[in-house]
Image 1 (cartoon, helix red, strand yellow):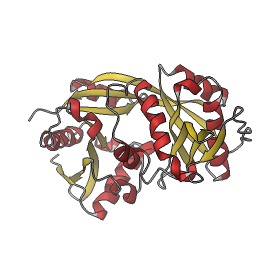
Image 2: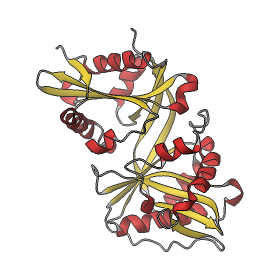
Image 3: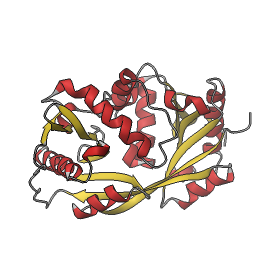
Length: 307
């Protein structure tokens, strides 16, 4: 079978790209508008694999500034299951590699569901090795009665929508929290404006779904969701971070409880989050709040396809 690999450059192409991703990796499903809403400072490409009139695969590569010092980029290949073992994945991987070489990239990082042994083996045959393993847990909201938020004394929990002036304070929390996340620490923290656009200003980042812990006017912690209209019943937890000197006081738990209460009231049916296997404190907190195991994901790093 000969497939044509081309950029998803039109809205129709992006719709077909999104359909492949939604089928192969449902937890990564996004709308066309969300796929297009990439900050200007990030170079990226979306590719589709066409077999005649049929779109049978998709690929993406993000050349993020935080990875440029080690000449790395995030890449992902999706192939419809009925088209496996026909060279589609290899063709997409090769095309992504050609694009990456033109943008000074020398290695790829990717993630694969930890229950997808075939895809992990496919990556390992191409020289990819495991970097980290994130465990996933989920919370069923349909029968849940949320607990009171109950922040510790002296702490107020508000939404970012209520306090739009606290962006710089959240950034200071992130500067402490990001490097401590296992598997993230080697990457440099982006400047404030880039962080605000990339991590806090995407279509899935909503101020009303971001919760901030305040001690007076000092931001001591925050927690945010990543949301998508392509998955209207599921809310994904993003970072939950607390400044070091404010830890072990129950702030993270209060932030999580605020998120659960908001999601329940907003009509979401399920919460999902992944945590690196070594991140014991947040894993223990999630278990206490009633989250239950689901398939996680393995992060791998490997070479570009040969030119």
